[in-house]
Length: 234
Image (cartoon, rainbow, N blue to C red; front, side):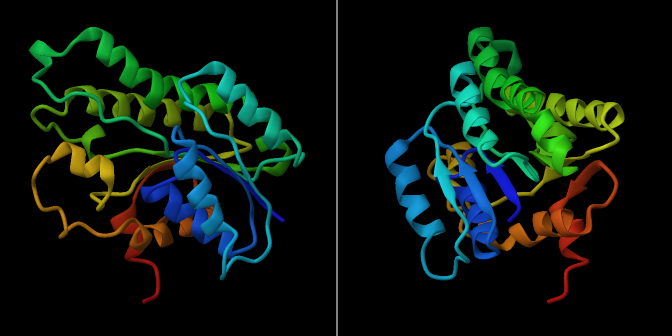
């Protein structure tokens, strides 16, 4: 069975992706900071509709090097890794850049940029053994300038460039910066406190775009979910 590691899998897009891969019979390694929420999600991954793959949960914070090492050890029990989905992210505060606390920016970069690279460095041998793929979940904020989004946007722009350089350096792998677009998630709600975001699509509706990357393995690059979904049969 193919093997995937998905970070931030207890909710939102990470959970929806894990559910879809579990339904296909993939073996999964999943993490999240909230151990209880992760346990609840794992119960779903192995529930009706799944095809019997193993699901190994490792709660913790991807910004913690020891947690990343634990993820690598658990993933190593499968021998190789077909897919790494760096989905875990933090929004951080949203003041104007002129007022952005630098220590908070450092924390955002630690989760959104350094942690994905740290996992890639640890897992490259397993990914290379499988000719695997890396999906770094990006945002339109990486390429568009939105007021008050400076910290998060900077981190996602850095993640995009990290993905592009890694793709050049590792032609044996597929490396994707994946822009899912707006979704009805807890983090998106944090960005718009008190506002109704029910018009945003559910994460489950975006997963087919990521699955298209996994199935078709186009060249490494930056891909928008909206463009990929346009090629998915209704």
